[in-house]
Image 1 (cartoon, rainbow, N blue to C red):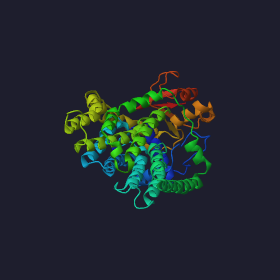
Image 2: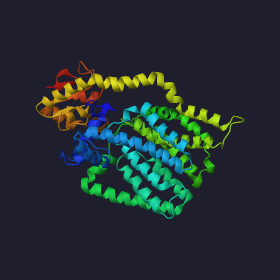
Image 3: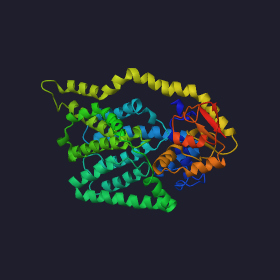
Image 4: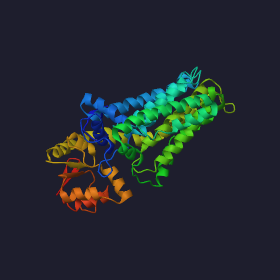
Length: 457
């Protein structure tokens, strides 16, 4: 994908992740978890910043490094999904279908997270590794002893130090083990506890209370209408969920049917609830996508072996219909969605590349600190990060305290603010209206430069 190296931001998160990756490996000596009275926030666990930071140090660009890692993590998750289908007793064809469904749905419906500098797929990949360790080859769950659930628990908690919202699978595994094998449940919890104490202790010793406050005490607005977005995302997987009718739940070895049923239910509920948070996007749905793909792969495996029929319809005819049902949302949306994807990815990036480079050059030429709505622009311009628009806007909305911004604006401590919103007057602002109202009281000059407005006193 040629856009991986393009200096066009795919998300406001990309520059934010890049700055924090620099801090993690010491290229920027500012704290990875700043105090809450500043305008830069970190509400993510730290592990991804070290991985991306080290790779970014090698390739010379944190955003490019994060995009490559994210793409590889997605491919790994698709492969791991297929391996888990095999471990649960599925066929190779079912495993291929499950992995391909993860790829296809991600490319079509969650394309904004394909090769984007964001830790969601990386954290998911680590947790899927723990899932594979737990199941092994599927013949002996937990292995001959308790080492598999112990190691799996350790790995899954480690995965939460990459992204802490991937909770459906760990919770499903815990409940499943408590219901099926108490000894392995104890081993699992022991691995989780060791990982939590070891990694949590190291990170707390490194960053202190600001680490806990940043990750667990982050201010965010929640909107009830987000439930409808989450429900819509889950309904988009309904073709695969319908495959559950063909999964031989009770005949899966070692009561894996119970595990997968718990996983699917919890993942769907988690996606719906998470979408109520401002700034939470399609990344909340990845667990539901993987769980539904596992069910689709096992359903195909069952039908391919001739185990199920509907009336007098042969199982293989039902199989073709089931595969078509899995792909129906994709096929229905293809005529309208593929041209849209082409416009917003290939065409949009190509058309905006020169303008984005123009903005970066203009920001680089400014003498002094610059605050960018799209942090990637300031990152590529080699400017230090002084303000995180989204997280600071959430902080202000919850606390009604904008003292830090008011102080910076009154003192003109920032040479310029860069906005991707289009506005002509102080009131005509698309995003972060409350913040821009404060800024425009002292910074009155705005000029369009490339893809953004540069606002100066």
